Image (cartoon, rainbow, N blue to C red):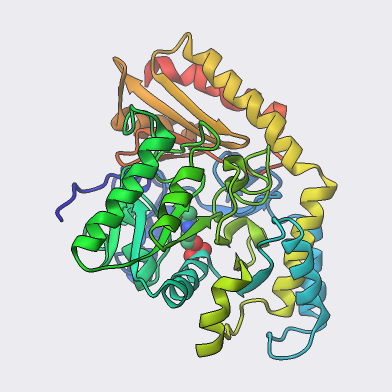
Amino acid sequence: MTRPQRATGAMINAFTPGSGHLSPEDEALAERRARLLGPAYRLFYETPVHLVRGQGVHLYDTAGRAYLDCYNNVASVGHCHPRVVQAMAQQAATLATHTRYLHDGILAYAERLLALFPTELSHVMFTCTGSEANDLAFRIARAATGGSGVIVTDNAYHGVTLATAGMSMSIGPAVAPGPGVFPIPAPSAANYPQGIAEGFAEAVTQACDRMAAQGIKPALLIVDTIFSSDGVYADPAGFLAPAAAAIRARGGLFLADEVQPGFGRTGSHFWGFQRHALIPDMVSMGKPMGNGYPLAGLVLKPGIIAEFGQKARYFNTFGGNAVAAAVGLAVLDVIRDEGLQQNAATVGKALADGLRSLAQRHEALGETRAAGLFIGQTIQTDGQPDPARTGRLVNALRDNRILISSTGPQGDSLKIRPPLPFGQANVDQLLTTLDRLLPSI
Ligand SMILES: Cc1ncc(COP(=O)(O)O)c(C=O)c1O
């Protein structure tokens, strides 16, 4: 199938070497970077930011200037949080081994993590990255279902391994869809005018029919439960439940990819899937799980791993190591002790309300789609989504020391996803800056 070339946010905002935007020192650094790291990497922004330090919701450049971070969901409890850093350093100085020895740390962490899930989801397996977690889920699903087909959304991102890159339509047609991967439109009102819940479930069934026509059995429906790379689709809450039922009706499993929305970000719930009142067969997670330490995992129903567990053994050298477990526990402690999920709900609502009220004065602001501190904001011209204008705004915000990016197949929406300690003063700074910049963008 030939698909249009994607213009992801990162591509729109990418730096062009020699464009004269950088100081001679940073231009030399960018050239050295390209020489050493090769051609596949991209830098954010027309004028890339040279960062040296992070703290809370701020990042600092070589001149000591502070940037408000409105984008980073890895350092989710705040950049370089002292309790997380302390837990990491202390465990690294005590014991750093893998899962082939008995150790209490990984079990203490597993108990705390699993307590955050419905009781049906009672096993956890550890990896280092979200890609590995999704890749493992696919292997397990193949063993459990005897199928191999995968359904993803049209601009999904699920990882960098061969299998998960093939599920990542947002990387572009050279990579995805991989063999046996069947994309369906993202759950927007525009794609499903007859109703998102019914339409999305019907699209799953139709994808299963397309698989059957090619002699492929379904293994997995995998979705990022906030649809972050598709453009952020949160509402109406509950719309995912019929889609999960639809894949199960055809013998496949439902995998909730919580790499983006997990760990309290959506405010009302700890996990994105909980907004949809369903229990996934498997849940993958990563990014915020270690607040910057490479920690990721897969939570699943025990029945699903029975077949895989008999035929294969699982060992991941660094996944679930003693340092990772200590870091993971500290992250959960901080989320609880600092009330970060509640903060995501309150401050996220203030930000979404503020954007909607700004939209009354600025025609460039279209639809605001939000759940807690995860917001997609369409940027438009004459009522039509405008990727070029979005790119200009992202760069102008960067020049005003606010770091943000864009999302959606054409990159026509701001993706606002700050560290969870984001406060009202930070909301005010973002809204005031948008108010000032929008008329001239
Ligand atoms: C929804 C989603 N799933 C999976 C991944 C892959 O995670 P990682 O980069 O840790 O391999 C990402 C990374 O951006 C993601 O956004």
